[in-house]
Length: 149
Image 1 (tube, helix red, strand yellow):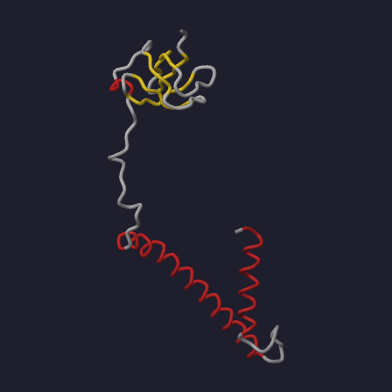
Image 2: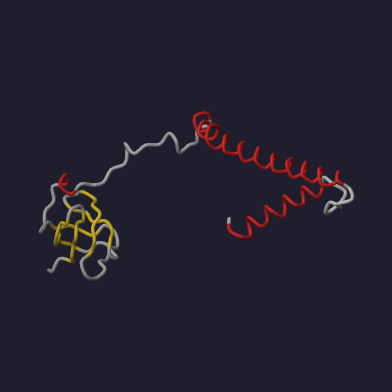
């Protein structure tokens, strides 16, 4: 909010107070002007307080219940169909050979044992169709290099 925000709220409040009366500052000769100024200050302060309390009520009690009434497309999704290819389940090991199914720069797809696997090229880019060999398996990362003929 900052200084500018607070100053803006003060100026808005002062404008509201002054809009309720026909004078700017109360004249000491007319005591009713001072009473009117105090009444207007109380009215504007009360309205600000009421608006603040209503906004707190809405944030605390109404907004959390809107999600129960209005269902968005994102609320029904879950991660049961998502998966990560586990290298152990693919029955591959270092030294297995295959073919680069896509351009590896440095990552791409390779075909090993008729299975498409995500792989990372070690060193240089590997063109599609190039014979590759698995150099290393590091957790779920398969690192390949071009096969030397």
